[in-house]
Length: 122
Image (cartoon, rainbow, N blue to C red; front, side, top):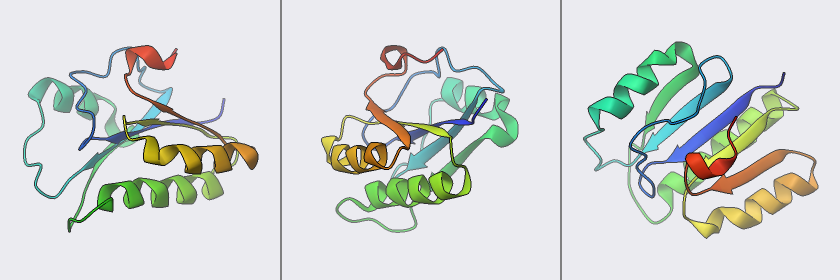
């Protein structure tokens, strides 16, 4: 089975928990803004349970769409490194939609979701 990635735009959506995500099936990357200094303990504990399959990326700087550009960079890097991987971006930011459409046109499985429970995650 191909790797499944959830890339979380934590500036835009702060999930209370990881819901139906199963360890061993998902890799989670939580993108955190420069000024975001707190993460809910329950969410942090759930992320840590994923071990090497989860990580935090905190922005060193800030600016308009800084976090979005980081998400886009990692999407490109991961999709080149892991053909066949599936990607979901957890964000309410529709600015990702043109990138997602382009990725789909290239045969890369990617979608934007606004909630973990509504993402069809199995």
